[in-house]
Length: 277
Image 1 (cartoon, rainbow, N blue to C red):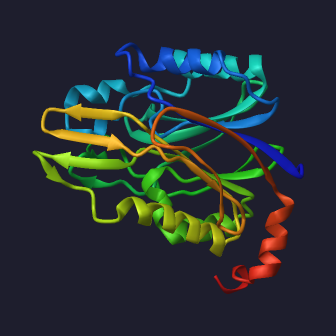
Image 2 (image 1 turned 90 degrees about the vertical axis):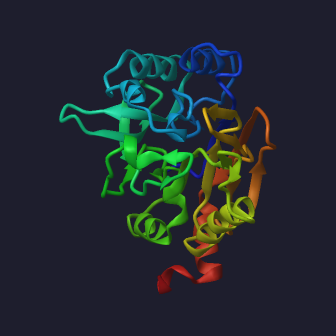
């Protein structure tokens, strides 16, 4: 494990010109500059629009397998520009199950690990139970420079997920996210103070297990028949004291920053929470 890691959060609406989400994403990564061996994170379901906004059988054809052309192209780009990439996608498996998954690709183009979403929302504008099978396993992925955990969107609300990752020796948690102001049939679905509480719960859990958390959220406006979500953007990163060290606004933005892994040990000693959880 190294002492300091470089991280990039990409917050971008890749379908703003109504062309292929994947091609826009691919070209965006290709045309940007990243520090060598930096960890780059994208939002939840990075390769598509947020199709769970409604229930449509045709959307199930959007799933791809881990050996698809899209994933292979991302592996090649990681190899060409020397980055780690955390990308979330609609995974189709050989046993017909489908998952909301995230993979970590290394600078040599290898898949180092995969995490499937555990907690699936089933509510207006977030019909994830309709599309995804539930996963029951949470893992820590050793990427060589550090050990990471991945909590996909709604997984970030549940303390037990943080506790399990902490017990497995996680250094940094990454969270691909799609959350925003949701309306259905002109009725507001988002709860009062939800955005404030979203940030608060992540910061609180970061403090309780003294672990940096990196959140990449969508920033697009997406509509489908009677449903609409204005995704908040506002991607952010915490340090091991739960303090925000980098934060995006609501529109397209890229954040470059570093995390000192030595600070985690200092925070554990200073706060003393971990021995009690």
